Length: 277
Length: 312
Image (cartoon, rainbow over all chains, first blue to last red; front, side, top):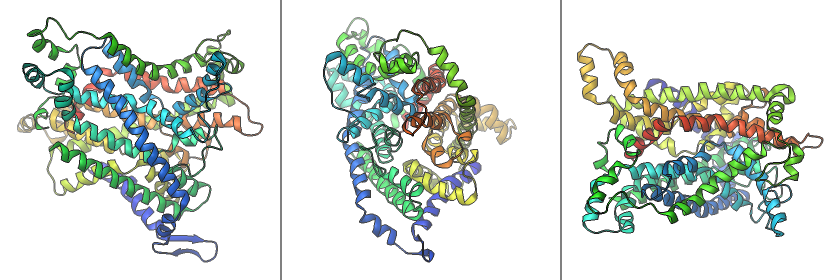
């Protein structure tokens, strides 16, 4: 435990403490670094760019996460039902995108999204249609959602499937004696039994949504107008630190975002677990 | 979920076989196994298409020249088969910088993921099998850390490392990768179930020290869990983008992910050479090792994951 604790302190606790320290100061051209108390926090709460980015990831969260987890759950139930041909092939193939780096996934989808040279352009030419541009400002968030869904649907499916496999068969036998149908078994036995896995997957997906960075930042090369440098909270902190040199304010935004994420994850966990008891 | 905590790690692996658990009860009512459904297979097949078509596109596109990419249909081969030429160009372009990036990635994965797994195994084993003061507090902090957004930590970590003069060195990428709260959690669950305390006591009675007990008794039993944690930390470090992006300025230290993106971004800059065929071929080369690892080690990581999900 000793070595783990030491490294853990260096890479987790120290940066947290350091960013709290940073968030209380401000670096100004005149007068240098001064202690400003909670001024940075007040500034963040009145920052439209920050709240716009929070709103964007919240929208992403309430649309993309249910779709992704819904598909993952349906596939896991289908695999578990034993009614599929080639089950093992399905399981491993649907999981594969998880092994693809976000960078590669985004580059790949970015190429395919292209209306002129990409796959979408080919489809437009082949059928003589003109599909809307997925990289336009209106649709780019949905396009990012598609990339994220593609990357993680198999991973979540596997978590659900693993949880389904360890349900004791005596429960199914009892259900069969009682004459319960497939859907009744799913509602009354399978779903309650994997509640823990569902809650964990939801929490990880929430954290993932709030941290959204890789996909928009890479896609920005293709869609400069649609994606701003404050597109997501994480992108905003990154831009503040590296283009704006506003380290103190950047640390403040990171802390606020971390707190929001933890509170929401905690609420989901409490609600999810209480229903189970 | 107390009824499943007794499942040994070997049991889920067994259950992933050819559904022996379904056969016995069903035979009493219906002859044979549950009827396979064409409709359900087709519906699941749609999801399969969704996951595989982009990968198919990548493989096909890797065989095309720069002109072929723009001029031919995305999901079918172009006239000239340029895969070998693309691979050769990928490795030789810009004085073979791709090889350099590949070696960097291997270094970060070997030290970062290897170290993270080592620490997670030690920590998980200690949490599962020993009592010490403050154990509950340690556990609470670690589980809390799982919920802390990893990338939210990255910017403060960068600021701290830059004070320490560590940025733009391999250490800046390796040190933060060494901690995997999820890996620790998985090992903790796995160790508390896979290593019977009686066995450890027996080993101690025979005069084995703690170190020997760990290596000769516990370690072999932990193998599926170790493979699982190793694979997932490998994916995390191999695919890492944000951390190296902020830590590294010098392209000589780039991992593959950053390098590929810089090749791609090159097309946007004035006077930059457009090398999309190399971006695509490079992407394919980047994902192959991980896909191979997952396919070859299926048996191990799936049982490890199943055991981990039991306790949740």
